[in-house]
Each structure stands twice: as C-alpha cells, then as structure tokens.
Image 1 (spheres, helix red, strand yellow):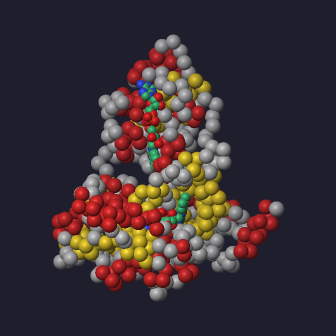
Image 2 (cartoon, helix red, strand yellow):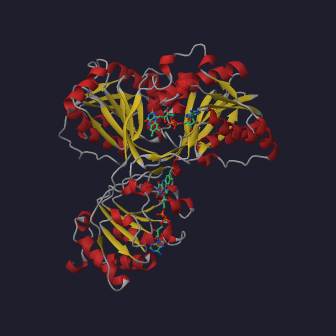
Length: 348
Length: 282
Ligand SMILES: Cc1cc2nc3c(=O)[nH]c(=O)nc-3n(C[C@H](O)[C@H](O)[C@H](O)COP(=O)(O)OP(=O)(O)OC[C@H]3O[C@@H](n4cnc5c(N)ncnc54)[C@H](O)[C@@H]3O)c2cc1C
Ligand SMILES: Cc1cc2nc3c(=O)[nH]c(=O)nc-3n(C[C@H](O)[C@H](O)[C@H](O)COP(=O)(O)OP(=O)(O)OC[C@H]3O[C@@H](n4cnc5c(N)ncnc54)[C@H](O)[C@@H]3O)c2cc1C
C-alpha cells in the first residue's frame, strides 16, 4: 500500500531526472562558517545518502577558499566556491546572482540554508527568481526514496503548537531554510576528500547599489547556541538581581546563563539570552531550568538538551515532565546551595 | 513628496490558538483577527517619515473582506489611502503566489497614484511566519531589499539613498542603498502610536479601494492562489513532547538536596567531559 502511494506520488510529478543532489548554501562571516551551515552539512549528508546522491556546498565570499576543504571535512562531496572582493560582505544582489547561476547550472534537487537573517534574505530572493517553493524555518527534514525523491520539510506552526510537513511537487529545486541548533554537525574528518569547483562572480562593484558602511559586532561575545552548559532563569527569579546568582552557578559549572521569554520581556536580561521559539534553539549537554514553568514555546528551544534539571517550587510545573532530575523547592535556597556544592566538589 | 507603501496582513492572533486535546486539531473559533504587529511597526516608521519630511502613505493588504478592519486601523493612525486586494482566486496562496499578487498591486498603486519610493513589510507574520514575502516582493519589483531593519538612520531624498541598521545574529550591520527600496521591519524599530481622535473619526467612515482579479489585466491565473503555490501542506500534527522518567530529588535541607543532585551529576560523563575535578579524589 505504502509502495503504491509512493509510485502514485511520483506519477503525479513531472520528470525531474535532470535534478540531482543536495546543495547546502553556506553562510560565513570573515571566513568562518556559521554553525548552522555545518549542522546542515551533517543533516544533508543523511538526505543525500538516502537518495544515493551527492552532497554539495556553495561557498560565497572573499578570502574563503579554505572553507571549501572545511566543507568537505564536514561531509560535502563537492564544493562550489565563488571568491571575489565584491562578495566580501553579504549583499542580496551579488550573492543571489552567484547562487542563481550555480543552481541553474548544477540543478540540485534540494537546496538548504540556515533560517538566519542572511539565509532567509537570500533564500527568499532566489526562490522567487527561480521560481520554486520555499519552506521556512524547518526543524525536521526527511526524504522519500527514489522514485518520488520528495523533500519532507517539517516546520512548527501556530506558535509551535503544531508541526506541518510541506512538500513541493511541481517545481525544482525543493528549497528550505532550517533553524539553527536543531541538527547535528558531523565530526570534522580531515581524511575526507572531495572536488572543488570555482564559480566566477560576474557582478561588478558599480552595479551594486548596496554598500555596507560598518558592522557593529555584539560587544560582549556571547554564544548561547553553542554553549554546552546552560543555567536558565524564568519569571520565578522575580527581578534582574537574582540572575547574578544564576551566573555564579553557571560560572562554577563553566556554563552560560539563559532565560525564558517572561524574564526577557520583564527587562531583567537581554534577548540574546532567550531560549525558545522566539529566542534561540539550544542543545547543551546540561540545561538547568530555574523558576521556569515549561511552556511549549520554551520547551521547543531546549528539549533536545542531553540532560535537563528543573528547579521549581510548584510540583505540578510542566517543566518536570521534560526533566531528567527535578527539585521542588524555593530557588533562592536551592541555587546558592547548589553553587556551593559544585564549588566544593570541584575544589574551586 | 515621498510615496510609501506599507504591506499589512490581517492574521489570526496565533497566541490565542488552542489545540483540541481530543481531536488534535486547531480551535480557531473565537481567535481574534489582528493586523500583523510587525507590519504596524512598518506603518509607524512610514508615519514618522511623513511627520518629518512629508509623505503619502498607501497601505495594501491581500485578504478576505473582513481584512478591511486592519486597513481602517491603519487609516486611523494616519495612512492616506488603503487598498484591499480580495478575490476567492487569491485564496490558498503560499509566499510565491502572495508576492506575485502584492507585486502587481504595488505596480498598480504606482501607476495610479504615483511612483513608490519605499515599501515597508513586517519581518514576518504571526501565522505563516516565513518572512519570505518581503524578499519576494522586492524581487518581483526589482527593488533593493533591506531585511531585519531595526532603525532607519537617514533618507537622502536628493541622492535617493537610504541608510539603515540591520539586526543580524552576530551584530548590527549599517548599510546604505538606493531607493526605491523594500524594508522589512523589526519591532525594535519604533513604538507604535495610538490613533488620535480625528483619525478614528476618519477611519469610521473610510472604505478602502477594492481590487479583484478583474482589476489586473495582465494577471496570470496560473500564478495565483492555490494553483500558483508550489508548496503544499501535506499533513499537520501535534508534536509529542519529550517524555522522560523524571527522578525527583529531595532531602531535608536545601544543602542536602543540592548535594544529592551534584552526586547525580558527577555520575554522568559531564565531569570528565568538562574537566570538573572531583574534590574527593584530588
Ligand atoms: C508566539 C509566542 C512565542 C513565545 N516564545 C517564547 C520563547 O522563545 N521562549 C520562552 O521562554 N517563552 C516564549 N513564549 C512565552 C511562553 O508561552 C511562556 O509565557 C514563558 O515561557 C513563561 O516563562 P516562565 O516559565 O519564566 O514564567 P512562568 O510561566 O510565569 O513560570 C514561572 C515559574 O517559576 C516558578 N517559581 C516562582 N517562584 C519560584 C521560586 N521562588 N522558586 C522556584 N520556583 C519558582 C513558578 O512555580 C512557575 O512555574 C512565547 C509565547 C508566544 C505566544
Ligand atoms: C502553518 C503554515 C505554514 C506555512 N508555511 C509556508 C512555507 O513554508 N512556505 C510558503 O511559501 N508558504 C507557507 N505558508 C503560506 C503563507 O503563510 C502564506 O502564503 C501567506 O500568504 C504569506 O506568507 P507569510 O504569512 O509567511 O508572510 P511573511 O512572509 O512572514 O510576511 C512578511 C510580510 O509580508 C507582508 N505580507 C505578507 N502577506 C501579506 C498579505 N496577504 N497582505 C499584505 N501584506 C502581506 C507583511 O508586511 C508581512 O509582515 C504557510 C502557511 C501556514 C498557515
């Protein structure tokens, strides 16, 4: 029955046999690839293997040739590189020109990129130009095997209360952007080899209206997405002061501080600490949720953590259902005690 | 005078949507329809430009007739005119079909009311939530595209250049480009004003311009509505929540409880992985 359905799905579709391979459009700044791009190479590898096809990467920028090799180490079979001074900063027009040229020549069946500001900016432009369908902000990717070879792109919908699987049958390539932090990168394997292909940039500086005047890096380097230990606080903290207490615990563990939206909206801590649907998706080794009730919009951002500890005075708080270890109690008593216990154990 | 178009979508307030636990389907009843709030930040920015330099503001919306409510709200705040593009043929549009129709709409607005200098969209909507329609419209109209804008720094009408601050994951990019331009607005851009009384009075009697498929002579039927939409929602489901066997830790004092938890943590791979020295073994 399932077989039959698959055949039928394939019958409904035009012949797409010229379109083969999975392409990851890599995002980079100053020659460093974004972690979401490496995560996508890991996920793309699985999809390409299931389709018995190649995994390709497209790197665009200036002084980025070294990234070609890196992309191979992280799973790519073939890397297209366009390296030119005009491509130093991301700008929609020159980047989409290169992308379109490669996509039209190479004809991958699937094109994936991070659902970051840059990824969404670029993907939205190229999908319209091609034209083809673009599924936004996916958190689950899969493919149907040959012959339908359909990308099953699933994304949260209606404030994360549901998931929707979206297909694109009548157009190629099938495009999707994916959220950072949900897929896992492969370990960097320097024994892997692959092919590197150079792509010319055809857009001259005079043809580009947009000029990047300056870039103001976020002053304090703070990276929640890549943190391996997070101590997160919610409305239960009651104000900005108690976050210092959480910072002490995070310091003792070698981690960073996260927050629920309630704490961010109250102005107790900056948005860059927010975990959840409208914040960051994280998957640390250890996540300690303190005074956080466990609303779905928070859970989607942290439920893939390896080990979750919840501290809450309400024994019925939903967060306990997702936690490996739970402590019912007053955080103002538990947290200092915990920090002291960790310090003692570590002889700090 | 500058002519600014603001794209406003009327959306169900998805924060209010609940799931029926028995059928696992959405309960849409009683969910209020509101003007997408990011779009209102776009409108506010247009109003500020109008206050400062003078401008004419045209609001456009594609949606069913009740979307007139959101357009009236825009008028009450100070928009000059509003166009509702409505037709059953437009229903079921994904972002590609939506940007096609909004592109045609803005072209027609420019033809009938004068060339457009700036188009504002929201960063994304509360329902579809893709953030793809803005770039789609820019592409259709061959406009410069500035997404995730948190501040308009400068508009040089003579040189026809605009400078904005874009908010990216790792910092703020200050970028200058040529007008006409399409900007997608973040909520950090401004604080939306309240409607003044005269605005509310004007809005009460206001009727938007209505355009249907008939009003677009060059419209290609194959590019609109469900037919013009490459993406198909094949299924929706309610995700299963991660379920684990939670071990509750409790002892007589907070200190003892904390000690038990630390013991548990020290039984995992964490201390080794992070080089946490174990006091008792040092
Ligand atoms: C569209 C949308 C997007 C959203 N995006 C996000 C998002 O990205 N991230 C996010 O986190 N939320 C998000 N939310 C909000 C989410 O629905 C919740 O409102 C929010 O997560 C609640 O935060 P909280 O758990 O800190 O607060 P509450 O739900 O108020 O929970 C506070 C908890 O602290 C406990 N507590 C209080 N005092 C103490 C004490 N002394 N000791 C121990 N425990 C104590 C209470 O028992 C309670 O469980 C979003 C909502 C919507 C509609
Ligand atoms: C659960 C769900 C998931 C979906 N997923 C996808 C998907 O992955 N890919 C896809 O192509 N479509 C998807 N759609 C369809 C999409 O939501 C609709 O096409 C919608 O018409 C426009 O997209 P958006 O709401 O995402 O708008 P966005 O792209 O998020 O909107 C950006 C801005 O464009 C302007 N704008 C958008 N629509 C209108 C309008 N009708 N009138 C005036 N201004 C407007 C507003 O200024 C808005 O702030 C999905 C729909 C649902 C309900």
